[in-house]
Image (cartoon, rainbow, N blue to C red; front, side, top):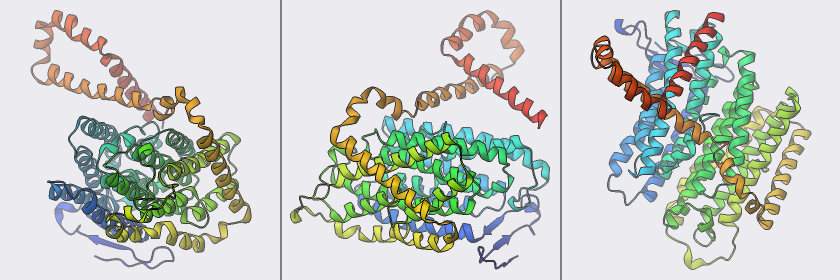
Length: 532
């Protein structure tokens, strides 16, 4: 059955209904297309086509290229299923497919760091999957799983959904897995950070926005703003080129959730599309220089790249300038509207200071990346390599995010723009440039070397995430103690050894403390359920 509804912002609305099959009556499997899903699919396939072309350059020497393409295409297919799913069951298939395929792609190289990052990514996302399943259980009592007909539900379930979305989108306090996932090949990083894994949670937050109350929106506002600040601050101190872009993704994801929490859902969705194209262009530009520099990721060894490929340097400039909000790139038009919105919504002083500092830090780390990698104009025609001619079409597709979408946004949100917001964007850009010149010329970062580890760990989120791994080990111990035999028989006959050996190991490895905290949180959530 097809439904066509023409509106101003939703030109085509299609549902392919398979509910005539008796087995699917309750679950309502089908496909859902509207203006936003079509726009998301358009941007996604543009990025995927560019990345497929880039893979032919970046991984031309890989012996298992066909298997890599299979994993990558399954990753993209899972994202497509998540975008066009009209019900929570099929959406869960795409959600789990993203987690499993990302686990395979991050561990592609097979070294210890890749496998550790893959396992860390998988376990943190499993935490969000568990919260999503708990929410799915409460949706079961409504008698259907169709997204368009969900009634108002209790606030705790929406709270679980928000945390499930934010584990996938690497928000505080689940941000540390995203920089570690840079152990994956650069094409995978470009796809993950632009339009698939990390934006899946924000896309679902956009879809479920009608269920979120004002109080929860205020909580998301604080969480998104803190994520924006931590990501931009960590990017100012790192020297790994891929991790700088990863911290940039963390900060921009917080920026998008901050915009969505203000109630500007359509504006936040548009900026998510603009950021996807910009970040894909930035990752591919950095990946080209990694190929030319034998995959050395340290930006101190990636200097003098102008001689190697001036075309890629220009693309690096364009993506960084658009991300920073320089006139007249797409990022400038979006941030002008958002800054005008922050003035309109009258944020308190602390939030406004953190927001302004985050914008200045964003300009600082982008200019730092450009300054170290590209600002060396000793041009030599003899050093231009073959990558120049092979890579042009890869960049041309992504220019839409840097230039084209800004014009569309300008026409769509023209009533929001004013001279004051445009002036503030220029003020932030100028302050960021002045700070960059001052720090880079006088080497201020050297005097802050004692704080660099503190900033790079995003206030020790890495240690917090690693301690979560011990929680999962409790399940293995309980299976061994309870499920693999009769509990009473095991308890009576092995009471002394259980107390002397097992519990001593638990206390020494701090499993028991984690288990108690988990039980305490469980009782706390049950108490909240009884209240709300």
